Image 1: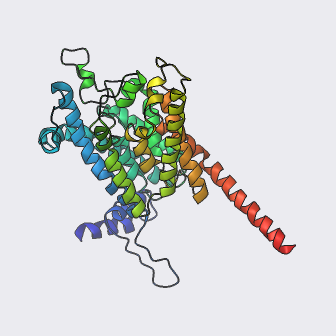
Image 2: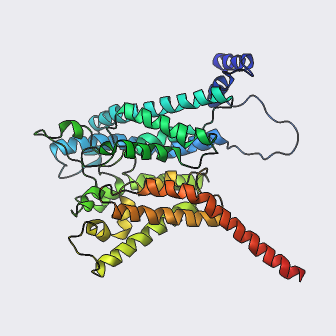
Image 3: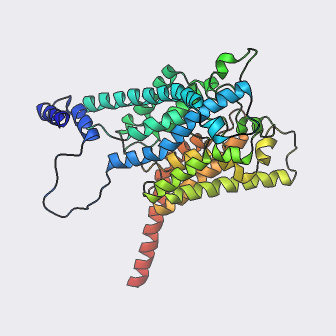
Length: 400
């Protein structure tokens, strides 16, 4: 109660002054509002923006913890070789694996939150508005979609760019047209491409050991396929996530559970998720058909990813993670129910298209989502106009 009263007194003391948003934000984050309504008609619900964001974070926690264990598992397996008889308890869920993940992933999370929230506070003080809770989810997403050894200074610069350009210039949370986390990822990829792709960035210390006798190579499955090399991991490894990749994108199993949790809590749209899956499968089937029809030679640079089983595209790379946690962003996604079907379908469709036709960087989900973020208002516009025309047509018939 002492801290709560202190924050409340500071709120009252600085009310109407420059620093008021900072104290309001701390008070709102830690405690329920002091004010309650007493009259009039109101919608009674337990959810607000803060609780919505916290629900998404809860859906991300299992992925984060798994990513920490997987960071250590990939690191030690690349040095000592993968265990012949894999045991989840003896080979994966170990203190050594978790310690590697803790010392590599936790700093990414801290830098993401500290820098991002600092920018939010600065803009709130300068512009005199409340600090919005939108970055709570973005701050957790960013460490999960970058390689394990991303330099902290590089991440800090990208976060500043993403928050300022991706959100604040549009007016803040609820006004942005691009997903801030993906804006940060896009900045990193185009500004520092050697740190975002290749076979030396997905396993801890691979870059430091490159060229030495005990060099580590952590080529992802997509990277192997882009080089026309057969994937060296089993379907179960792909599904459960015992493969190299960005921190949080490897475990399709946990991402699926997180998606079901978000659908159950009505935070994310099942229409976007389902249509994105359909879009990805459709594009994958088209490419499989091209290969089976012998329209492309086996030695072609596109052959490996084209011949990849269409449904397995959902098990590797960031496709599943992007569909569940970022395509469903309620701010940057389509708002109409029919529009969500188009929006999601094209995300999945374009993701696989970019993945296959970009062998230098065989991943395209973040580009596909950003592209559809731009087109989401247009999709909704035409959906609404279509409904208006149908209603006018019915009205004219009824009048006649």
